[in-house]
Image (cartoon, rainbow, N blue to C red; front, top):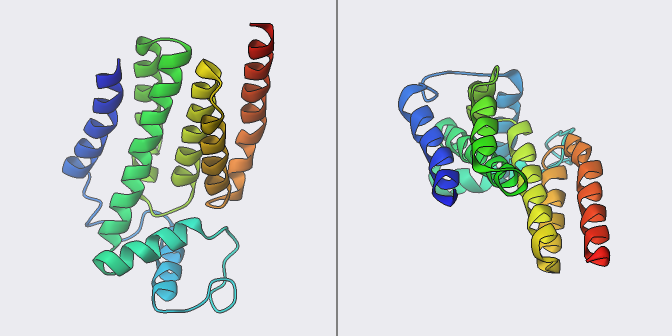
Amino acid sequence: GNLSGFLIPVLFFLIITAFIPFDRVFEYEVDEGLYLMRAYLHMKGYALYKEVWMEQPPVLVLLLSCLFKLFGPSVQAARFLMLAFSSLLLWSVYQIVSKTRNAAAALCAVVLIAFSARYVRLSVAVMGPVPAIALSALAMYGIVLYQENYRKRYLLLSGGLFALAVLTRFFALIFLCASLIGIFMAGRAKTSA
């Protein structure tokens, strides 16, 4: 159960690190270069939205900028960060499905995601979709935990994570409806109990 939920994303991270030569690939997607350049310019002191043009929210660029300050401007470090978000996404999906269904269904869901078309490539590409979806999935897991014991701290955590997801990519708003339905269903279950 919980050990599988931990081992699966760790194994995914290690397998991708060992067998995918993402340190030698110049570019996975065009947007990757844009994120990296914006993060580098921000690290050098240029203001986002004023001196550096962006059409997306700032969270990923700010994270990359901090990463560059710590480790130097490295594409490989940025891709490791993306792989960490991808592993977090797999962990979150496993937790959600195992708590709402069972461990076998959770394992099946994670394997289907990991082997879906382009998932590995998107897992290492320095772009916003995977971090936004990972944060959204983690926010949904907070709602699942709230449904179990009605502790408001899980709703606060979920709301904060959801805000970070939206501030990573606006399309994370597509998860708003599912989040509100989960909260509504938890509220009805609480009042009928």
